[in-house]
Image (cartoon, one colour):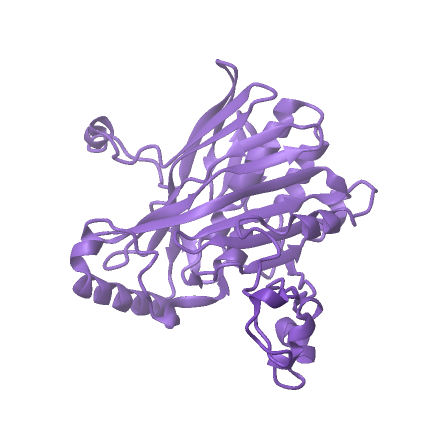
Amino acid sequence: RSLGLRSQTLPASNSSCSSNSFQLLKPRLSRPPHRPRQRNARKMSQQSSDSKVSLKSIVKPWPEEDKSQFGIENVERGESGGCKFVAKDGLSLNRTVVTHLLKTMGKNIMEGKSIINISLPVTIFESRSFLQRMTDHWAFAPLYINKAAMAKDPVERFKWAITFVISGLHNGCRQRKPFNPILGETFQATYPDGTKVFLEQISHHPPVSQYELFGPNGSWKLYGYNEYKASFRPNGVVGGQYGPNVIEFKDGTKVEYEMPKVCVNGMVFGDWLFYWTGEIKFVDRKNNLTASITFDPDSAQSMTSYLTSFVAENSPCDYMKGDMKRGDVQIHTIEGCWLRLLKFDDKVYWRIRKWYPFKPEEMVLPSTFVQNVGDYKWAFPPGIVSSLPRDKER
Protein backbone atom coordinates (compact mmCIF):
# COMPACT_ATOMS: atom_id res chain seq x y z
CA ARG A 1 0.00 0.00 0.00
CA SER A 2 1.05 3.57 -0.48
CA LEU A 3 2.98 5.28 2.29
CA GLY A 4 1.87 8.65 0.95
CA LEU A 5 5.41 10.05 0.89
CA ARG A 6 5.50 13.77 0.19
CA SER A 7 8.46 15.99 -0.54
CA GLN A 8 8.95 18.86 1.91
CA THR A 9 11.51 21.69 2.03
CA LEU A 10 13.14 22.30 5.38
CA PRO A 11 13.75 25.90 6.50
CA ALA A 12 17.43 26.82 6.31
CA SER A 13 17.51 27.88 9.97
CA ASN A 14 16.34 24.45 11.09
CA SER A 15 18.65 22.42 8.89
CA SER A 16 22.15 21.46 9.93
CA CYS A 17 22.84 19.78 6.57
CA SER A 18 24.85 21.29 3.77
CA SER A 19 23.33 21.98 0.37
CA ASN A 20 24.59 18.60 -0.88
CA SER A 21 23.15 16.70 2.06
CA PHE A 22 19.72 15.28 2.46
CA GLN A 23 17.34 14.41 5.24
CA LEU A 24 14.47 11.89 5.09
CA LEU A 25 11.29 13.06 6.73
CA LYS A 26 9.03 10.70 8.59
CA PRO A 27 6.45 9.32 6.13
CA ARG A 28 2.93 10.62 6.63
CA LEU A 29 -0.02 8.36 6.09
CA SER A 30 -2.19 9.57 3.25
CA ARG A 31 -5.32 8.55 5.19
CA PRO A 32 -6.23 7.63 8.79
CA PRO A 33 -5.36 3.95 9.43
CA HIS A 34 -8.81 3.20 10.79
CA ARG A 35 -10.64 4.31 7.64
CA PRO A 36 -11.02 2.14 4.53
CA ARG A 37 -10.43 3.54 1.06
CA GLN A 38 -13.79 5.29 0.85
CA ARG A 39 -12.88 7.38 -2.20
CA ASN A 40 -11.81 4.46 -4.39
CA ALA A 41 -14.68 2.29 -3.18
CA ARG A 42 -17.38 4.86 -3.93
CA LYS A 43 -15.87 5.81 -7.25
CA MET A 44 -15.76 2.22 -8.43
CA SER A 45 -19.26 1.50 -7.12
CA GLN A 46 -20.62 4.22 -9.39
CA GLN A 47 -19.27 2.49 -12.49
CA SER A 48 -22.12 -0.05 -12.54
CA SER A 49 -24.76 0.13 -15.23
CA ASP A 50 -28.05 1.89 -14.54
CA SER A 51 -30.02 -1.05 -15.93
CA LYS A 52 -31.95 -3.39 -13.62
CA VAL A 53 -30.10 -6.51 -12.50
CA SER A 54 -31.31 -9.69 -14.22
CA LEU A 55 -31.04 -12.39 -11.57
CA LYS A 56 -31.76 -15.16 -14.09
CA SER A 57 -28.66 -14.20 -16.04
CA ILE A 58 -26.27 -14.50 -13.08
CA VAL A 59 -27.54 -17.49 -11.06
CA LYS A 60 -26.30 -20.97 -11.92
CA PRO A 61 -28.14 -24.18 -10.96
CA TRP A 62 -26.18 -26.66 -8.89
CA PRO A 63 -24.11 -28.74 -11.37
CA GLU A 64 -25.05 -32.41 -11.56
CA GLU A 65 -21.41 -33.49 -11.58
CA ASP A 66 -20.86 -31.97 -8.12
CA LYS A 67 -21.89 -34.78 -5.78
CA SER A 68 -20.71 -33.09 -2.59
CA GLN A 69 -23.35 -32.25 -0.01
CA PHE A 70 -22.41 -28.59 0.31
CA GLY A 71 -19.91 -27.92 -2.47
CA ILE A 72 -16.97 -28.24 -0.04
CA GLU A 73 -14.47 -31.06 -0.37
CA ASN A 74 -14.14 -33.58 2.50
CA VAL A 75 -17.12 -32.16 4.40
CA GLU A 76 -20.40 -33.96 5.04
CA ARG A 77 -23.30 -33.67 7.45
CA GLY A 78 -22.71 -35.41 10.77
CA GLU A 79 -25.08 -37.94 12.29
CA SER A 80 -26.20 -35.39 14.88
CA GLY A 81 -26.01 -32.46 12.47
CA GLY A 82 -23.26 -29.98 11.75
CA CYS A 83 -20.38 -30.14 9.29
CA LYS A 84 -18.25 -33.23 9.75
CA PHE A 85 -14.68 -33.12 8.43
CA VAL A 86 -13.74 -36.47 6.93
CA ALA A 87 -10.23 -35.88 5.49
CA LYS A 88 -8.03 -38.38 7.35
CA ASP A 89 -4.76 -36.57 6.71
CA GLY A 90 -6.23 -33.27 7.85
CA LEU A 91 -7.61 -34.79 11.05
CA SER A 92 -4.31 -36.39 12.03
CA LEU A 93 -2.37 -33.21 11.21
CA ASN A 94 -4.60 -30.90 13.23
CA ARG A 95 -4.80 -33.28 16.17
CA THR A 96 -1.01 -33.43 16.29
CA VAL A 97 -0.94 -29.62 16.55
CA VAL A 98 -3.67 -29.55 19.20
CA THR A 99 -1.95 -32.24 21.25
CA HIS A 100 1.28 -30.24 21.14
CA LEU A 101 -0.51 -27.08 22.29
CA LEU A 102 -2.27 -28.90 25.09
CA LYS A 103 1.04 -30.24 26.36
CA THR A 104 3.03 -27.02 26.12
CA MET A 105 0.37 -24.46 26.98
CA GLY A 106 -2.14 -26.60 28.83
CA LYS A 107 -2.82 -24.25 31.72
CA ASN A 108 -3.56 -21.14 29.65
CA ILE A 109 -5.59 -23.05 27.10
CA MET A 110 -7.73 -24.87 29.65
CA GLU A 111 -8.52 -21.51 31.28
CA GLY A 112 -10.14 -20.43 28.03
CA LYS A 113 -7.66 -17.69 27.11
CA SER A 114 -7.57 -16.42 23.53
CA ILE A 115 -5.65 -18.45 20.95
CA ILE A 116 -5.62 -15.70 18.32
CA ASN A 117 -2.03 -14.73 19.21
CA ILE A 118 -0.67 -18.29 19.42
CA SER A 119 1.76 -19.23 16.64
CA LEU A 120 0.68 -22.30 14.69
CA PRO A 121 2.46 -24.49 12.10
CA VAL A 122 2.03 -23.27 8.53
CA THR A 123 0.92 -26.75 7.43
CA ILE A 124 -2.58 -26.28 8.91
CA PHE A 125 -3.29 -23.08 6.91
CA GLU A 126 -5.07 -22.64 3.61
CA SER A 127 -3.64 -20.36 0.92
CA ARG A 128 -5.90 -17.39 1.75
CA SER A 129 -6.04 -14.68 4.37
CA PHE A 130 -8.99 -14.00 6.67
CA LEU A 131 -10.04 -11.10 4.44
CA GLN A 132 -10.58 -13.48 1.54
CA ARG A 133 -12.20 -16.04 3.83
CA MET A 134 -14.81 -13.49 4.97
CA THR A 135 -16.31 -13.44 1.47
CA ASP A 136 -17.37 -17.10 1.87
CA HIS A 137 -20.31 -15.98 4.01
CA TRP A 138 -21.46 -13.62 1.25
CA ALA A 139 -21.71 -16.37 -1.38
CA PHE A 140 -25.36 -15.53 -2.16
CA ALA A 141 -25.27 -11.75 -1.81
CA PRO A 142 -25.79 -11.16 -5.57
CA LEU A 143 -29.00 -13.20 -5.41
CA TYR A 144 -30.71 -12.58 -2.08
CA ILE A 145 -29.68 -9.00 -1.27
CA ASN A 146 -30.70 -8.00 -4.80
CA LYS A 147 -34.04 -9.74 -4.18
CA ALA A 148 -34.38 -7.74 -0.97
CA ALA A 149 -33.56 -4.50 -2.78
CA MET A 150 -36.26 -5.22 -5.40
CA ALA A 151 -38.94 -6.06 -2.82
CA LYS A 152 -41.59 -3.36 -2.28
CA ASP A 153 -42.98 -4.82 0.94
CA PRO A 154 -40.75 -4.10 4.00
CA VAL A 155 -41.60 -7.49 5.54
CA GLU A 156 -40.64 -9.34 2.36
CA ARG A 157 -37.42 -7.34 2.14
CA PHE A 158 -36.64 -8.26 5.73
CA LYS A 159 -37.14 -11.95 4.92
CA TRP A 160 -34.75 -11.85 1.97
CA ALA A 161 -32.12 -10.05 4.06
CA ILE A 162 -32.35 -12.83 6.67
CA THR A 163 -32.20 -15.43 3.90
CA PHE A 164 -28.95 -13.93 2.66
CA VAL A 165 -27.28 -14.35 6.06
CA ILE A 166 -28.49 -17.92 6.66
CA SER A 167 -27.70 -19.11 3.11
CA GLY A 168 -23.99 -18.42 3.55
CA LEU A 169 -23.42 -20.09 6.93
CA HIS A 170 -22.68 -23.53 5.50
CA ASN A 171 -20.01 -22.02 3.27
CA GLY A 172 -17.92 -21.23 6.34
CA CYS A 173 -17.29 -24.93 7.08
CA ARG A 174 -13.59 -25.06 6.29
CA GLN A 175 -11.08 -27.36 7.94
CA ARG A 176 -7.91 -25.35 7.35
CA LYS A 177 -7.26 -22.00 9.00
CA PRO A 178 -6.74 -18.82 6.93
CA PHE A 179 -3.68 -16.63 7.50
CA ASN A 180 -4.03 -13.61 9.78
CA PRO A 181 -4.00 -10.43 7.65
CA ILE A 182 -1.23 -7.91 8.22
CA LEU A 183 -2.16 -4.41 9.37
CA GLY A 184 -3.31 -2.36 6.39
CA GLU A 185 -3.78 -5.39 4.15
CA THR A 186 -6.64 -5.00 1.67
CA PHE A 187 -8.68 -7.24 -0.58
CA GLN A 188 -10.86 -6.06 -3.45
CA ALA A 189 -13.18 -8.18 -5.57
CA THR A 190 -16.27 -8.07 -7.76
CA TYR A 191 -19.31 -10.32 -8.26
CA PRO A 192 -21.00 -11.12 -11.60
CA ASP A 193 -23.87 -8.69 -10.91
CA GLY A 194 -21.43 -5.78 -10.56
CA THR A 195 -21.24 -5.79 -6.76
CA LYS A 196 -17.90 -4.42 -5.54
CA VAL A 197 -16.20 -5.79 -2.42
CA PHE A 198 -13.62 -3.90 -0.31
CA LEU A 199 -11.96 -5.21 2.86
CA GLU A 200 -9.15 -3.86 5.02
CA GLN A 201 -7.39 -5.03 8.17
CA ILE A 202 -7.65 -1.99 10.44
CA SER A 203 -6.23 -3.46 13.68
CA HIS A 204 -3.64 -6.10 14.45
CA HIS A 205 -4.16 -6.55 18.21
CA PRO A 206 -6.97 -7.26 18.53
CA PRO A 207 -7.46 -8.43 14.91
CA VAL A 208 -10.26 -6.36 13.34
CA SER A 209 -11.38 -6.36 9.70
CA GLN A 210 -13.57 -3.68 8.14
CA TYR A 211 -15.54 -4.24 4.95
CA GLU A 212 -17.90 -2.58 2.47
CA LEU A 213 -19.92 -4.10 -0.37
CA PHE A 214 -21.61 -1.86 -2.94
CA GLY A 215 -24.52 -3.40 -4.85
CA PRO A 216 -25.23 -2.64 -8.52
CA ASN A 217 -26.79 0.72 -9.36
CA GLY A 218 -26.38 1.87 -5.76
CA SER A 219 -29.40 -0.24 -4.77
CA TRP A 220 -27.81 -1.52 -1.56
CA LYS A 221 -24.62 -1.70 0.45
CA LEU A 222 -23.36 -4.04 3.14
CA TYR A 223 -20.82 -2.79 5.66
CA GLY A 224 -19.43 -3.36 9.10
CA TYR A 225 -16.38 -4.68 10.94
CA ASN A 226 -15.54 -7.89 12.77
CA GLU A 227 -13.17 -8.69 15.59
CA TYR A 228 -12.03 -12.30 15.76
CA LYS A 229 -12.02 -14.12 19.07
CA ALA A 230 -11.40 -17.79 19.79
CA SER A 231 -10.50 -19.86 22.82
CA PHE A 232 -9.79 -23.51 23.46
CA ARG A 233 -12.13 -25.88 25.22
CA PRO A 234 -11.10 -29.37 26.46
CA ASN A 235 -11.97 -30.99 23.09
CA GLY A 236 -12.40 -28.07 20.73
CA VAL A 237 -12.58 -24.37 20.04
CA VAL A 238 -15.33 -21.78 20.43
CA GLY A 239 -15.22 -18.31 18.92
CA GLY A 240 -16.58 -16.14 16.18
CA GLN A 241 -16.71 -12.79 14.43
CA TYR A 242 -17.88 -10.04 16.78
CA GLY A 243 -19.08 -6.72 15.45
CA PRO A 244 -21.96 -4.94 13.71
CA ASN A 245 -23.15 -5.84 10.22
CA VAL A 246 -25.52 -3.54 8.32
CA ILE A 247 -27.42 -3.98 5.04
CA GLU A 248 -28.53 -0.55 3.85
CA PHE A 249 -30.94 -0.03 0.96
CA LYS A 250 -31.46 2.93 -1.33
CA ASP A 251 -34.56 4.17 0.52
CA GLY A 252 -32.66 4.37 3.82
CA THR A 253 -33.85 1.06 5.30
CA LYS A 254 -31.16 -0.62 7.39
CA VAL A 255 -31.11 -4.25 8.51
CA GLU A 256 -28.64 -4.77 11.36
CA TYR A 257 -27.37 -8.11 12.67
CA GLU A 258 -24.44 -9.89 14.33
CA MET A 259 -22.99 -13.31 13.54
CA PRO A 260 -23.59 -16.29 15.87
CA LYS A 261 -20.82 -18.15 17.69
CA VAL A 262 -19.05 -21.10 16.07
CA CYS A 263 -17.98 -24.32 17.78
CA VAL A 264 -15.48 -26.91 16.57
CA ASN A 265 -15.50 -30.17 18.52
CA GLY A 266 -13.50 -33.37 18.21
CA MET A 267 -10.07 -31.78 17.89
CA VAL A 268 -8.57 -34.39 20.23
CA PHE A 269 -11.03 -37.31 20.08
CA GLY A 270 -14.36 -38.12 18.41
CA ASP A 271 -15.78 -36.74 15.15
CA TRP A 272 -14.36 -33.43 13.98
CA LEU A 273 -17.54 -31.31 13.93
CA PHE A 274 -18.23 -27.68 12.99
CA TYR A 275 -21.52 -26.00 13.94
CA TRP A 276 -23.06 -22.62 14.76
CA THR A 277 -24.54 -21.91 18.16
CA GLY A 278 -26.12 -19.04 20.05
CA GLU A 279 -28.47 -16.51 18.51
CA ILE A 280 -28.78 -14.02 15.67
CA LYS A 281 -30.94 -10.93 16.11
CA PHE A 282 -32.06 -8.86 13.13
CA VAL A 283 -33.40 -5.31 13.45
CA ASP A 284 -35.09 -3.00 10.93
CA ARG A 285 -35.69 0.15 12.98
CA LYS A 286 -37.33 2.11 10.18
CA ASN A 287 -40.15 -0.42 9.77
CA ASN A 288 -40.24 -1.60 13.42
CA LEU A 289 -39.30 -5.18 12.46
CA THR A 290 -37.24 -7.62 14.50
CA ALA A 291 -36.31 -11.27 14.17
CA SER A 292 -34.51 -13.71 16.43
CA ILE A 293 -33.09 -17.10 15.39
CA THR A 294 -31.66 -19.58 17.90
CA PHE A 295 -29.12 -22.16 16.71
CA ASP A 296 -28.99 -25.60 18.30
CA PRO A 297 -31.87 -24.69 20.65
CA ASP A 298 -31.82 -28.07 22.42
CA SER A 299 -28.20 -27.79 23.55
CA ALA A 300 -27.75 -28.23 27.30
CA GLN A 301 -27.08 -24.59 28.12
CA SER A 302 -29.40 -24.50 31.13
CA MET A 303 -30.42 -26.85 33.93
CA THR A 304 -33.87 -27.34 32.35
CA SER A 305 -32.51 -28.29 28.93
CA TYR A 306 -29.93 -30.55 30.58
CA LEU A 307 -32.58 -32.49 32.56
CA THR A 308 -34.99 -32.81 29.62
CA SER A 309 -32.17 -34.17 27.42
CA PHE A 310 -32.38 -37.45 29.36
CA VAL A 311 -36.06 -38.05 28.53
CA ALA A 312 -36.46 -36.39 25.14
CA GLU A 313 -34.60 -36.73 21.87
CA ASN A 314 -32.70 -33.58 20.95
CA SER A 315 -32.87 -32.02 17.52
CA PRO A 316 -29.71 -31.96 15.35
CA CYS A 317 -27.15 -29.31 16.28
CA ASP A 318 -27.69 -27.57 12.90
CA TYR A 319 -31.40 -27.06 13.60
CA MET A 320 -32.60 -23.50 14.15
CA LYS A 321 -35.87 -21.79 15.00
CA GLY A 322 -37.14 -18.33 15.74
CA ASP A 323 -39.75 -15.73 14.92
CA MET A 324 -40.30 -12.37 13.27
CA LYS A 325 -42.15 -9.52 14.96
CA ARG A 326 -43.58 -6.14 14.09
CA GLY A 327 -43.37 -4.27 17.34
CA ASP A 328 -44.38 -6.81 19.98
CA VAL A 329 -46.63 -8.84 17.66
CA GLN A 330 -45.33 -12.04 16.09
CA ILE A 331 -46.04 -12.08 12.35
CA HIS A 332 -44.02 -15.10 11.15
CA THR A 333 -42.28 -18.18 12.51
CA ILE A 334 -38.80 -19.11 11.31
CA GLU A 335 -37.51 -22.66 11.14
CA GLY A 336 -34.97 -24.73 9.29
CA CYS A 337 -31.47 -26.12 9.19
CA TRP A 338 -28.52 -24.01 8.05
CA LEU A 339 -27.27 -27.05 6.13
CA ARG A 340 -30.55 -27.74 4.33
CA LEU A 341 -33.25 -25.06 4.14
CA LEU A 342 -34.86 -21.96 5.62
CA LYS A 343 -38.62 -21.52 6.05
CA PHE A 344 -40.83 -18.61 7.02
CA ASP A 345 -44.01 -20.27 8.24
CA ASP A 346 -44.46 -23.04 5.63
CA LYS A 347 -42.76 -21.28 2.69
CA VAL A 348 -39.17 -22.25 1.78
CA TYR A 349 -36.96 -19.26 0.97
CA TRP A 350 -33.64 -21.07 0.63
CA ARG A 351 -32.65 -24.68 -0.04
CA ILE A 352 -29.17 -26.21 -0.25
CA ARG A 353 -27.86 -27.36 -3.65
CA LYS A 354 -30.42 -25.37 -5.64
CA TRP A 355 -28.15 -22.50 -6.70
CA TYR A 356 -24.38 -22.64 -6.96
CA PRO A 357 -22.56 -20.21 -4.61
CA PHE A 358 -21.07 -17.08 -6.19
CA LYS A 359 -17.31 -16.68 -6.02
CA PRO A 360 -15.81 -13.17 -6.07
CA GLU A 361 -13.18 -12.34 -8.65
CA GLU A 362 -10.21 -10.51 -7.18
CA MET A 363 -9.74 -6.96 -8.40
CA VAL A 364 -6.16 -5.70 -8.09
CA LEU A 365 -6.01 -1.95 -7.50
CA PRO A 366 -3.25 0.04 -9.24
CA SER A 367 -0.31 0.83 -6.98
CA THR A 368 0.01 4.46 -5.84
CA PHE A 369 3.54 3.96 -4.56
CA VAL A 370 5.27 4.87 -7.82
CA GLN A 371 3.16 8.03 -8.08
CA ASN A 372 3.97 9.18 -4.54
CA VAL A 373 7.62 8.15 -4.30
CA GLY A 374 8.60 11.51 -5.77
CA ASP A 375 12.17 12.59 -5.11
CA TYR A 376 13.04 9.42 -3.20
CA LYS A 377 13.58 7.16 -6.22
CA TRP A 378 17.31 7.46 -5.58
CA ALA A 379 16.84 5.40 -2.39
CA PHE A 380 15.95 2.26 -4.38
CA PRO A 381 18.10 0.07 -6.65
CA PRO A 382 17.83 0.82 -10.40
CA GLY A 383 14.72 -0.65 -12.00
CA ILE A 384 13.01 -1.67 -8.75
CA VAL A 385 10.42 1.14 -8.81
CA SER A 386 9.16 0.33 -12.30
CA SER A 387 8.79 -3.37 -11.41
CA LEU A 388 6.71 -2.83 -8.26
CA PRO A 389 3.28 -2.77 -9.96
CA ARG A 390 4.07 -6.02 -11.78
CA ASP A 391 5.29 -7.65 -8.57
CA LYS A 392 2.16 -6.56 -6.73
CA GLU A 393 -0.11 -8.07 -9.38
CA ARG A 394 1.93 -11.28 -9.37
